[in-house]
Image 1 (cartoon, rainbow, N blue to C red):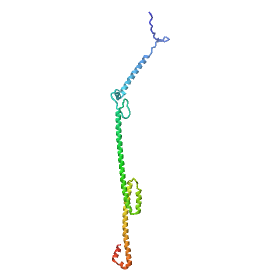
Image 2: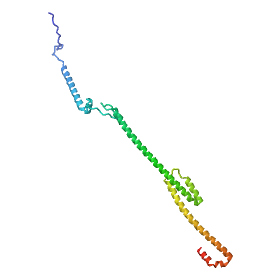
Image 3: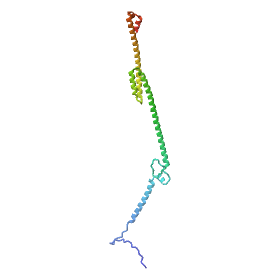
Image 4: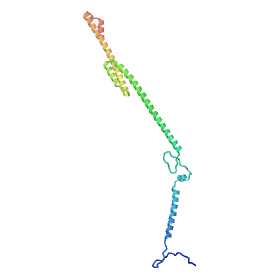
Length: 222
């Protein structure tokens, strides 16, 4: 019979006939297996503990994330076009309402200012006309009033109203004094005319006119 071949075992003896030496690879392999098992267990624990519940629910399809109209898309979130358009429409409506309100307020303010300006113009025109009429009592005063009227601004204010009110009051007082002075001058002129008439008659009639009781009373009163 042929002899069966058997592989020879590696010699555990050294060249000098020393003791046998076995490799230490078993401990290394076991250590790597232990490290692998610990890593897998740790990873499982971290996934279960650290992962948020809402993410797990989204991952499992139990909850659908709500769409955000801010333009930011979160993890696992889908875009709902209808909701975004609806949100933008509401914002546009609110903005349009605010713009309409502001435009209305501005128009009301402009109309109020226009009415106030028109009322001031009418009041100033009336005062100017009255001042010109009162100032006709003297030529020089009338000319100065016309200058003041011409210089009045096109857009009148409270200052111009107060100015012409004071001017009108002054002219009325001045005209009253002028009228009083005119009456006094007229009275004085009449008395002077009577005196001239009397002394003219005295020059013609002589001393007899001086002794008249009527003329004496008039001279005493005058």
